[in-house]
Amino acid sequence: MEKKYILFDNDGVLVETENWYYEANKKALKKLGLDLDFDFYQSIMIKGGSAFELAQINQIENDVIEKHRKIRDEYYQEFLLTKDLAIPNVKKVLNNLSKKYKMAIVTTSRRVDFELIHKNRGISDFMEFVLCVEDYAKAKPNPEPYLKGLEKFGAKNEETIVVEDSQRGLISAVNAKIDCAIVKNKFTITQNFSKAKYFLETIEDLEAILN
Image (cartoon, rainbow, N blue to C red; front, side, top):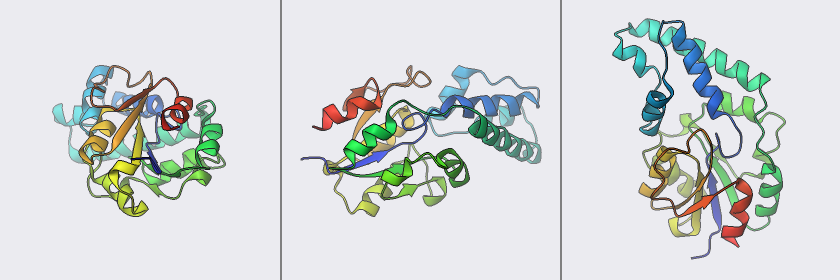
């Protein structure tokens, strides 16, 4: 069936933020004397967990963990305000696609972070709606976020495509029975994408697979 709807992940697909979220977690955990290994972080992210599982493993008290989560959030917002997050040609691609498809964003970002990322960026202007982590009960890799996206569109799964860059996002889409295109991202490139329908070198390749 011809595609009519596109559900985009945000981080690593429309903006380059994933490395900065890792760095914010690493910096906050360092204050607890813990070193957040990249491979450990990847294994946690794939299943939709938290980097602060490292603190729990090391039997750090919950109130201390919560304090350092807030510190992490402050570091992350500082990075969002000061680092270059742009991915080349995203707005050009969205402008072209908007002439034929209805589009939305389904992200695990907090809304406060999403709004900070997208302030004056112009990407949200192309979207019918944005679902953030506060908008659903179970996060990716659970299918709920993408099922909710289908519901808001009033769309069938077979007329929709998801664009992702992570294994947990792919699993979420597959379990929602939606075709998924994976866009290559150096941060997630070692993850298992065997269930993806399409593979994109860059976001610009999306136009070719849809036409």
